[in-house]
Length: 266
Image (cartoon, rainbow, N blue to C red; front, side, top):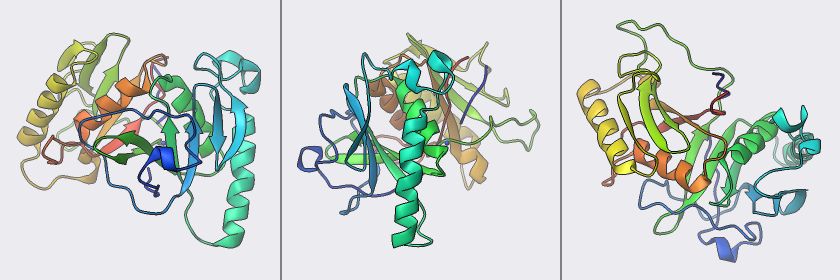
């Protein structure tokens, strides 16, 4: 299994329908767990069922949830879309000329029907242009965001007393599987929890129990994070529902707020 793991918060207007840079997107809907948006709009990458639009410019077509393999580096097995990377490189160059030193961040508005694989391909391609910060747009009572990270390498720590827990949740085609890199809260083969893919309530309860038991007070930064990996075909609706279930409780108490996104299973 290989993990390709990328955080950020930029801002966006409060309604998708009112913003021309979110055309044709029905963002995933969740009951809670989104961070609030500021009033101004940052750089946005929009993925609709028919195409990808970045900063208001149509970049590439999408068909049946996928980009043409000919547009990917490495063909059907590739995850980098050179056309996306090239466009973002030019966009960042223009932004740096206008506002030197300002960090580049991207909002990702991905239609809830699209697969996780497309999110990974877009993040990987945008990151290749030099972007480090990403936030995923969703809808609760209003539009909001979830900061997500896409680290360069798979986190790997020995199972020692002082090592980070390395909590992880895998979203398969039909299951939610909770485990830990350290092995202290189960492993992928013998997980802490395995429930139906839509049973996020049980997942949230198990994660809350772990957070309360292991971290009753202040905890290290590394133990604030959780790895989320998903089968490439899983819908963005299910992915976001899983992410918000492990970040906070319904009454906004912190669980594992730093989400490390993985490319999934290989």
